Length: 290
Ligand SMILES: [Zn+2]
Image (cartoon, rainbow, N blue to C red; front, side):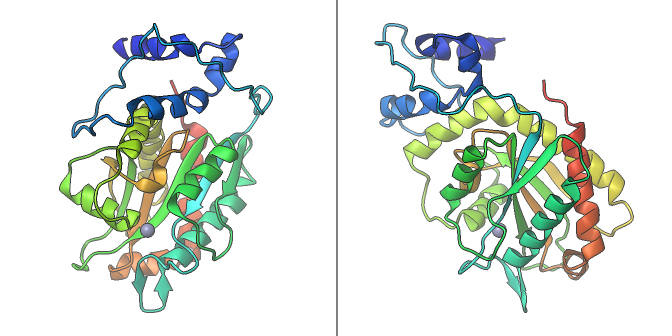
């Protein structure tokens, strides 16, 4: 309830002519203004609710909308095969993360044609390099309802195995932090601006992201029971740069460990990738957001 109040307060200075417009793109017009106002704020270690705006602020005229009213009949799922081009991701022999995730992404797209109401788009469908921030931007441009970045894990201990699903979070968990720093490939701390964006995204999309992740966990456990791969965790948050800025629920999916022999065999197994694609699509079709 408190959350709803805070959200209302946030919107008060921005309510455009029609209330419908306000619902369509909650972050679009807001975010630049908030960055301007808060860019000097110190980043907080704990996640925080965004502060309500002062009601006495002069009214900001919302930008005219470029797109007509959002009346989509299909759920648009943006799949982001991680890495690509000059960035192979994690490597084992001649096996590259960038190729595995591209294969799975295409599989998801192919299988999705059998699902009514789901439309799958890819951030890349070839072996090209994309900067991390570009990926969320593509998802926003496509007006996605869910953004999933696909990755492959690796660890020095080859017994480590299994899948993990993450959502965006400013987490203090040591393992997630380490993994995030590998996938982020950026050194040092994230900037204040990024922290603000992260706080914003958290408030709006974290619950929906977890709903999708929970549904995926259920379907993976059911549909992939015949394969020797386990879902390790699906409720972890981490600070993944690639998810920052996506104006939709977003997940980062580590589909297995390239360093583990059993996982590695599955990651190259076409039937397994197809079963995984189907499990993901079943989850998306089933997920009911509050
Ligand atoms: Zn990766």
